[in-house]
Image (cartoon, rainbow, N blue to C red; front, side, top):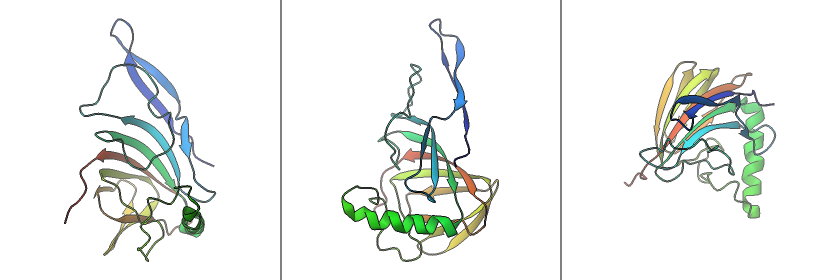
Length: 180
């Protein structure tokens, strides 16, 4: 069960005064399969510079991993322990060949962890609670509450080797892909 995340969003009234337009649990929570990570979408922008006009809900769409072109995504992800999540990732990978598109982000050549993937983005990750390993093609590092990782369009995975969920906040910013 996802831990509800309170989302408070500001905006403007008709006279241009600042107001609170939302104060409620974030409405868009995604989990592909039981045991997989739970993603709570908090906000996104669709242009640079960002557009602060209007008070419409911007996360009301199908889940997508990467941010919109020239945009950003702000989300919190709950990573269950690997003993649960690895089986879910393997099920997702197996069903990716059924034409559903659910496994499209997975790097099928990565033997170290079934969650390896990359996006054309710069990702700012902050560990809110728990601990988690960030895995690269070469190497890994343990991150604990308060640690920050700047992920720059690299192939990566997350591994929670504890018995408790790890909560991470992410801001993904659209970026040009790495070209060797």
